[in-house]
Length: 372
Image 1 (spheres, rainbow, N blue to C red):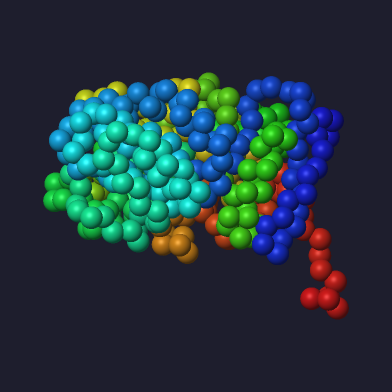
Image 2 (cartoon, helix red, strand yellow):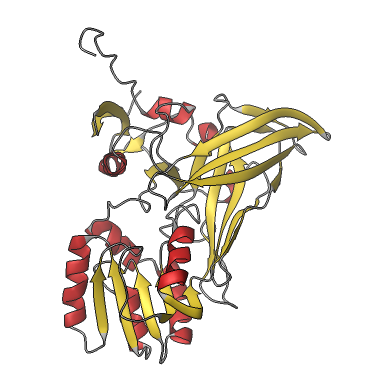
């Protein structure tokens, strides 16, 4: 296609090529790999989070309310100790900062040494480190583009059993995922490709997973005018209560057209009384995730049609990050028209099973039977 080329991608024993949008080939909606679930953070990604004022404002407000005279633990502090440092500035008695990436933990320890506060950095996974004492407050910015995708439900269940005092508070207190149906084919005008500057992150995610598979893609540059249906909550995580629920979503088609998948986006509140951050309505690093229907071709819909969909999650092989499955049906005038299904895995599973991934990735070469 004009304005597109190919780039070789390798992961584990697999090799393929991804379709690349050449620099300057066009603006508008774009595809971005969902990177937050994986250990692929670099200085660019950390800087983008530091500059995310929509997110940062909510965290600062909640920490300023809760941290004074408390023992605070931050899970996933990164190299900059952003929230650990702010908790200390807000009058926390002691702060423990946990970071799994060795280089980020080293840099965080250096940052802690340069501050006049009691901040102790512990290197390792949140599920394996042991704090010197239990904390009153846990700060964990482990929120995904799909709310629970970074495994925060599993991490916080462990934190409540080992790191927090009974009744300990969590920031953020509430995370949800909203869903609507869209036609990505129409939004991208059938031109499925990834901007050249994002291709390395695609390869980083696949390498972190250890294989080629149908990784999650976000869609940037969208607003509510992209939605073909009404929207609804499909995932809710209430961390102060330790509860996760998956409401059945009822989506009504707004106008005639077609749909080919689900758009999922984040809602987050760090403390009671705060406004809800809606990542579809807000300029933030959390981008909505697109999950294609298994049916492949776009589905024609009429105004008033109803799509009902529910979500099921199961832990991925690492026991922390969830895989997502969506099932439902399209109905017209109260009569079921066709079943719908979609899936979004953390790692593993099929490769090039969806129409999106078939369009983006070249089929791997077939091995010579004599060499197999």
